[in-house]
Image (cartoon, helix red, strand yellow):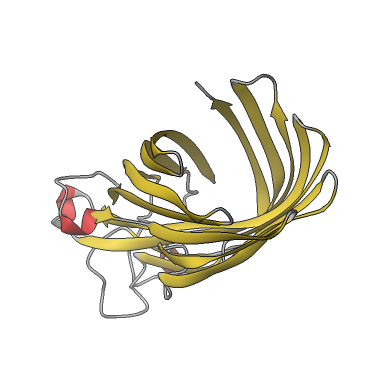
Length: 265
C-alpha cells in the first residue's frame, strides 16, 4: 500500500509585462506499507535457504526548490522553463551526489486558434526509467463552451466539463514516477542502490473553486499499470535462488484516490 503526502508552493515574480521568474518549494513523500512475504520470492519455502523476507516498510522523499521563468516571445507564443532541484532519497544516512536529481522541462505553447493551443518541448525526469529525456507534445482545446481536452504526452490526458467557471468534472489518465537513492540497514554495511517507482492512474474527479483564494481537487480511480524496480540496498547474492533483495515488475491493478487543497494569495 502506498500513501503519498505532498506539499507544493510557487511564487511567480513579474519582471516585465511579458515575462516572469518562478520560485517555489516542494515536498513529495511516499510511505510504503508492505506485507510480510513481500520481496521474499518465496525463499522461506526453500528448506535450504533459511532466509526471512527483508523488504520492510519504506519512506521515500523528494524535496527541494523549484526555479523557472516564463516569457511571451510573441503575443501567441509562450515559453516556460522549469527545474526542480532536490533530494530524492530514503534519507537514511548522509546524503551523497546520487541522492540529488533535477527534473526539468522547457515547454512552448502556441495559440493557433482562439480555442486551440499547441504545445511542444522537452523534459527530463525519471517517470520512465529507460527514457529520462523525452519530447513533450500536446495541446489544450476547448471543443465547445465548457468542454476542454488537455494532452501533454507522454505524461497526461484529461477531458474536463465546466458547468460553471468554478466547477469542473474531469476524466483522465496520468503517469507518475521518480528514482530514489536508498540504503540498507547499518547491520549490512550501508549498501546503496536506486529504486525506481512508476504508476499510471486512470481517474474521474471534481475540481471546485470555493472562492478566489481556496480550491479543492478530488480524484478517484485505479492504478492501471506501472513499473517498479525496488531494492533494500543490501548486497545481492550471486545465486539467483537466494537473491531476494530486489523486487521488480509491473503493478497489479489497484484502487487510487487523491484529495488536494489549493490556497492562492
